[in-house]
Image (cartoon, rainbow, N blue to C red; front, top):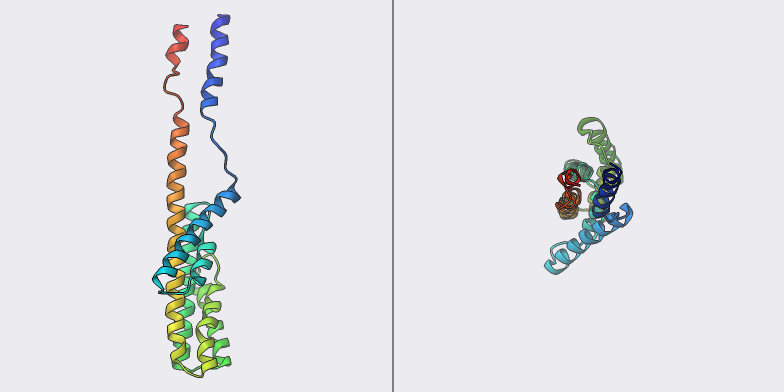
Length: 198
């Protein structure tokens, strides 16, 4: 009886020791994901010479999250707010014209759209920031044509960076779940039948 009791106290100890997982600090994991996403975006855009990697890098940093559902929300928020800002800026630019007052008007309209119509949780400030980025070159150059290329490039760069961040988060989450399943399985050699035989 005493031997059986001793065995019951020893078996969980052996099983638990084999299930010890390496705990990675969340900040370190977050930094690694951003590093991978920024590297992917930088070398892709740098070697293709399609776009400047600036806003793509910013999008990687902004969208990257420890959890997949949080990254998805950040992805939707950044894409929608960027599209709203770019569309609002271009619409005001071509219907009214370039000017400082027009920039202020477009900023106000983009804020109202994002906070009252779309209501996507997240950084709604991206919409008025995009308006300023899209319309300012046209105002400085006194030409509507300067804004369209800026709007297209800005939207594409944000999309590329956001997709890269979402992809890195998805792959990292899949790897974590796979490692968690391996850890939870534990040793197959230890079974309750050995306790009964003892």
